[in-house]
Amino acid sequence: SVMIGSLVAGTEESPGETIIFNGRKFKSYRGMGSLEAMENGSKDRYFQGGEIDVKKLVPEGIAARVPYKGTLYEVIYQLSGGLRAGMGYCGAANIEKLHNAKFVRITNAGVMESHPHDVTITSESPNYSRSE
Image 1 (tube, helix red, strand yellow):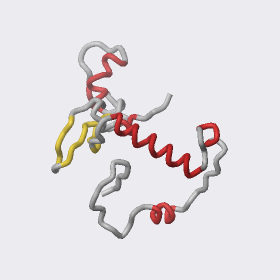
Image 2 (cartoon, helix red, strand yellow):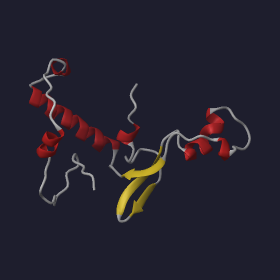
Image 3 (cartoon, one colour):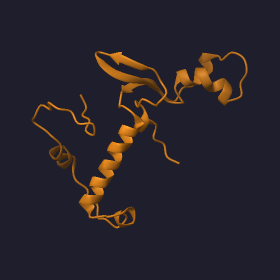
């Protein structure tokens, strides 16, 4: 199994309310260890009956909002396209050959240099996100 909650959070299919904040679309997101999730689900999850004493809950996660990403299909399509491109760069025709590919580490400066810089992006790409 894999933990990919943050990868699919923000998709149309993910649970949570779609909200507009400062003119941008977001989905509400909460981890199972958040206070809100514990308040709503701990009775069922931990077989507790009756009222929950919120003061006795010890949250281990948060509730937040994440940028809306579109449909899960669109997200997976971009991921698989990136995988195909990476396999092409490595000369790997299939997953088995990818296991034998040589990976090279680059410095943080190299990562920054390999991304767009010193420009203002005027047309956003679905597979490229930037911190604001």
